[in-house]
Length: 341
Ligand SMILES: Nc1ncnc2c1ncn2[C@@H]1O[C@H](COP(=O)(O)OP(=O)(O)OP(=O)(O)O)[C@@H](O)[C@H]1O
Ligand SMILES: [Mg+2]
Image (cartoon, rainbow, N blue to C red; front, side, top):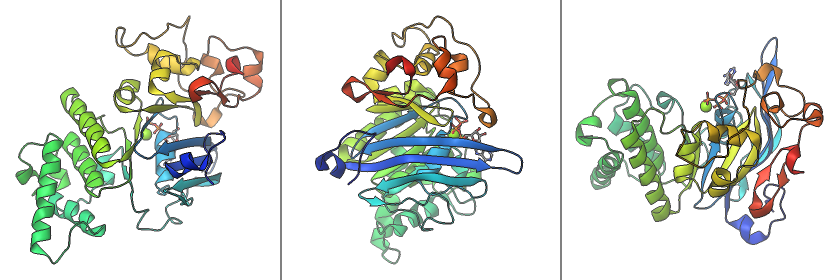
């Protein structure tokens, strides 16, 4: 039976879990040093849930997402332990040579760099059509099916605020702007009608109006189709706008998780408070911190004990000596901080 975040689970909850990551640890090994990019990560996503993974640059978000998608390159990646379950079955191999090369049906990822998802030598129409054919949604030799597929593609691009979709589908990826390519990559993932989509920084290249439209479209698709979403972002406000729950990541570790309202209104981990305090005032009533200092850690040299302790105004001796485990507080809010043991 699947279990979640160290809690006792009943089978009902387990059956409505679409994704579970258990104690996942990943190292990147180079000739003269290693970095632990994901450190005993536990996350789960329920069917129909929208979950955010938030953290500063270099905290390991993309590495975690790429591992779930089974697309990590080895070298440099090494799987040091942990398992992944999707839709009731184990899909653990996280390195690209080991995972089935066609991927896992129903699990799609939109990469931070959209060109990674797009084939440079195919027109937009052909690659979107081909991806729909690959999962049986369009029949190659059936003209009606192909024409319906093209209609669905144009409709989806329109929903993603792309003007003149009929012209855009004739273009090659290099002929499009970065923001446009990002939306084509999102369309590619959504048109396959997956059960779970992982979107890595989906709003980064988009202007504010298109961002808002995209988040609304994702929410609507979620309620219409029961799609589950993981939104990876360095911007807590993006996660707060769309996600039901949020995981906060620091130096490869999940340091806090909980319902979005709890994370925003009642953050427990000092790092979550730091992220909130960097949002312009007036956005949320984030509690001010006495002082916040320092930069994200060098992953080659993560501080002993709690990795956040050198920046934490509340740190005491123990924080420099041992790593806090996740303590589960009320409303299933989890926090890895000795202040809450
Ligand atoms: N292919 C690679 N080779 C070497 N180091 C890498 C590689 N990919 C990631 N890293 C390092 O691993 C750490 C985690 O990177 P990752 O891309 O997972 O973080 P991230 O949270 O997604 O950051 P960002 O917000 O900048 O996208 C960083 O220190 C990064 O420099
Ligand atoms: Mg990233």
